Length: 410
Ligand SMILES: [Zn+2]
Image (tube, rainbow, N blue to C red; front, side, top):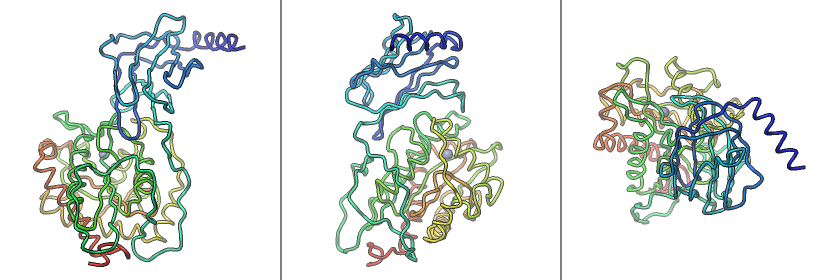
């Protein structure tokens, strides 16, 4: 029976499949798992083979060929020991040797961003617990709602070099999750000198987390601390459920069609729904940011934005997000000189659609502006920016102390 099925599939493949060539291969590894991306010169059929074992993933790719030679295949990356295309059988097989049992997701991505067709293999540790339950919204507390602290698996650890802090006061720490935008497969915006947004956001994000961790009453976490792609929905869920964040700040450095555009801006979720932004610019930026999942490759999510907004309004998190945005803008103004917009703008950013956390997206500057690209890649400027964002978050915590926290008791 198996033989018949395989034969049948071969027939289909021969009639429809383009003889794709694997022209490039990239790999990333992070706390969430390991990703392999095979760049193809056209579309290809593929199928996870039943010959796969816990230690070896086999993907058949009818008529596939490759120009990649031995040493250029990734080796010893995260969960992957070795990868190769075995072209000797009638149907070529991609063979991925694993060093531990993994859950594999294999999918084909069409052209997106600066990429053509890609076959993506996502490997997650077999034991990863990914929360899927919708948030349970309890009766609304007036101030910024704090998720109940409870022990939970934490795939992304806090930065290792976190200094020990004095515990002169009781009261729990406020948890702030810093989310460096883009990563891995998704470079984000690219500056005129070729700098990738994903590296700028990672450097600034790390600096913000480091600054916050040096302060009393705050624990900063990160959604990613290396060059790794994380879907937008996973970023906010990681913050809310795994890290129990009170505050979520996504860091970006974006681009505009005009190279003159400059200055920082701060965004919250749009009040009136997915298609109502406070400006054309905010709308455009949200659309650009939401493409991240398309570039990186994720199944479309189906959030009902109106339900999310209703939850946020009930909890007061949207109001608090706007307050925190206003305070951060005040701190950023002297650092960046000129703000792109001195008010907190609002649009339908997918990464901000999580009730229960004060959520903002900080656009630190325009990587499309040659002067700002230089600044944004300068470590001293990155630290200055990070300090301004960190100070803004701290001031917000002082002005709107969440009951039971360090800030409410000091
Ligand atoms: Zn971005």
